[in-house]
Image 1: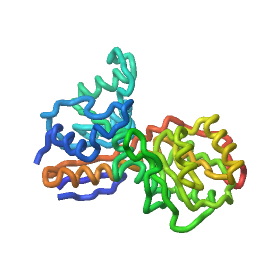
Image 2: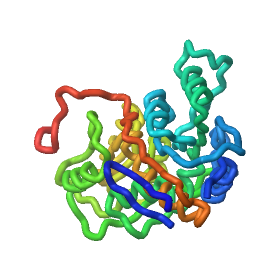
Image 3: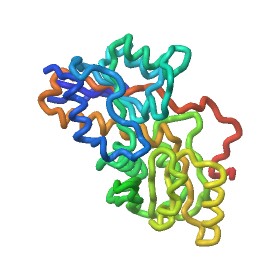
Length: 295
């Protein structure tokens, strides 16, 4: 039986697979042609004929994640973010990317990335973040390059911005930087838009959706400030919730594990899927943060 492990939890599933078979299953779930035109997804390293017994899932293909996978005996790492999104001219170990490529090859570990093709999947990254917000029935926030991106839906019952943020924070993996919120703690939240990862280019779609709160990540000063200025003259919403890039997208990994095992079916016998415990959020500590009672 294959199994998925996460923080001591083991789920059993009802042999031996090749990398090519796993890649084919991934590309049925997350077709390459649904990725955005600027993206770089798919198989990065590995021989399609090599056997795969252990798979390691992570948000980012960092050196720490590769080391964790090596220690776990993984044959394949599947990450959300690409390793080689932008062109490079050397894989010497004098750079982090070069060292990562070398570690993968020397330890015979394959790497596969599902990025924006996982963002637009149904279910995908947006659905996982929507579920963490307490949303059930959702629709696309916007359509980009012919693909649905982000989600928007209604909470089971209205709540305050502070309570909504607290509940979301409890459902996210812990990070030192937590979440940032722009808006009055007692503001009413009923309709919520979400977009995992960096989302400050989608404020127009958020306003058009009628969302009271927008949950995304990597909100920059000027776009966020301008969005709140616009809200001030149009009713005060949407409020902004920056949930962090790593945290907002890591929620997708357990669903990926379950879907991959289901897609592989009986071919997944003896397959193990591990969820990385490496926090690839880059921040280590925060000073002087204020809670909702201390704006």
